[in-house]
Image (cartoon, rainbow, N blue to C red; front, side, top):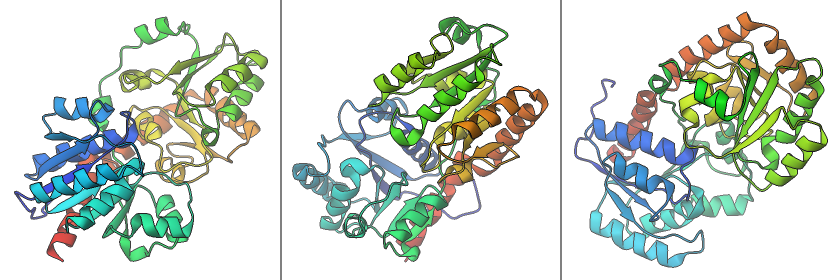
Length: 370
C-alpha cells in the first residue's frame, strides 16, 4: 500500500459479462479484493451462473446478477441503467468486451455516472466502431503498451488511454508444487522434459507452429513431452495435425483446467507461440512460478517476457525459430533456471496486485477529483 490518500467509502460498480473464468475475470477479482482492502466499496454486476459469479461470492464480494446476451442486448442496458441509478456509485468500471463495454458505457451515460473501461485484447477494429465503442468512457485502460498503440491507431486520443498492466499473485506460486499427481495423470516419465502451452485453441495462438516445432525435435529429444491446455474452435484440427506428425505419444490436449495454477510450476518450460497477444496472463503465471518462457516477438509478449533475461522471444509463425529456442533451453539447465528466477523476481516487483490496484486507484481519484 502506497502513501496515496484514498477515497474511503467511495463506491465502484464493476461490470464483467464474460461467461467463463478466464484471465480477464481473474484480474477483476484481484482488483476488487485489493480495492476492498484499501477501504473502497465494490459491487460486481455479472451474469448469473457465469464463471466469475461463484468466485466473487466465495471472496465475499457483493454481486448483482444481470443476464447479458451480448452487445445487442438492449434490455440489459436498461436494467443496468436502473441499477446504477439506484446504487449511485461514484464510478462505473467495465471490464469485458461482450456487452460490458458497449452497453455498460451507454448505461453509465444514461445514469450520468462517469465510466472507465479495461481493454485486454490487441485485435484491431474499424475506426468508426472504436470511436462509438469508447465514446462513453472517460478513460480506456490498456493492459499493455501494445494495446495502447492499437487504440491510438484506431483514433482513440492518447490522453484518454491509461496503461495499467495485468497483475499476477506471485505469492500464490511461492510454495513448491506437488508434481507427482500431474505426471501420473499425463503419464509424463520422471526423466521427461515437460513443456506446457496454455491458451485458446484459435489461429492467433499459434499452436500449429508449436506442433511442427515439436515434431522436428522428437527424433533427437526422445524425452520431450508437450501438454496443451485450453479449448477452442481449432481443437479437432490441431489434434489431427498432431496425429499426422506422429506426436501421439508426445503431445496431450488437456482442455481448459481451472487448477492449472496449482501445477504450472511442474513444467520445465512454457511455450506461448501467439502471433497476437494483449499481454499473456499464462506467461505471467509461468514466470511467477519460476518457469522459463519461450514466446513470440509480438504484441504484449514483448512486455511480459524480457528477451534473454526471463525467456526467449522468437519471430511469430516461425516453427524453425521455435524449435531452435526450445532445443537450446532443453540443453541448458543453468540458463533455464536463471530465466525462471529472473522471471519470478520481475513478477514480484513489476506485476504485483498491489501495484496494479494502486495504479487503478490513482486513476479513479484523478477522475473523481477532476
